[in-house]
Image (tube, rainbow, N blue to C red; front, side, top):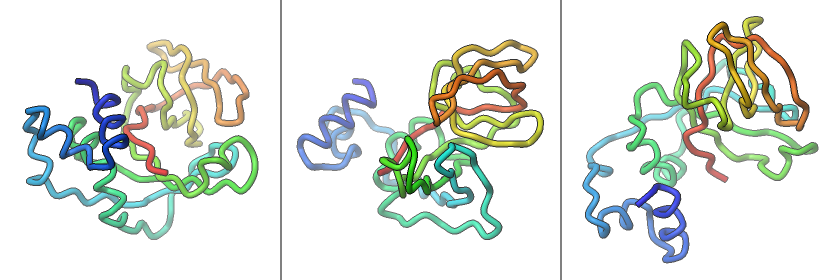
Length: 163
């Protein structure tokens, strides 16, 4: 069973993903792992990410909604970023929380996926990485829909997006 299937079944039945996984015979210790994820950044309507001066812990209800995805990927150094967009393409996701792992390099799993990217100039943004070279040059589609050629320092795939 894929995580997407487990999420769909849970949504259909109105139960948690953990319940679906337990009934499917998957034992990944969801209850045993405590997760403390900080809301440490915001993403604006252009997809540009800025770190908050004072990170705050995410409410437990938000963490529980993404617990299966977090546990499957390991919960070390996971960061939350809240989308704050009153206009533009990201406005439909206003107030959603994006969960991702802190990265110091380009994670191969980020290529072809919605990712949090850090350019060599330090700018961080939400984008889909179309192609990337070993030297860091990459073709991305920004949250605004604009294609760009950038030089990446780091990139990590989005683990979960909580509306």
